[in-house]
Image (cartoon, rainbow, N blue to C red; front, side, top):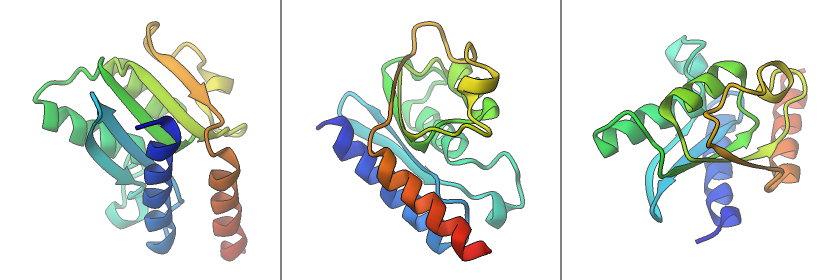
Length: 143
């Protein structure tokens, strides 16, 4: 499997968030070719500002592995992680992060570029157009 395949699955999660009237961000954690967790934003449903897709996915993946470190895993997320999520990604020592759209307003690269673990590899821009279009459609609907 490749990055585009897994990002398409993360986009499906983002679409589920869109349908649930959540900000459309989706995430997948993959380890050794196996999907450990899928999630999307749940901040509205749970009334919890920390219920971002990445946070939900990290918790579920750690539970599936039976350990808190995800060093051999890749996190696919449709939007650049925020500072909070980047911190969690760093603490979980996720080995690789692949994200779609950049987030110039709230993304970690602007505010905390060193938040991830030093060994974490990052690939950005995977299916960015699709992720951006979903976000734009969501906020257009809100106006």
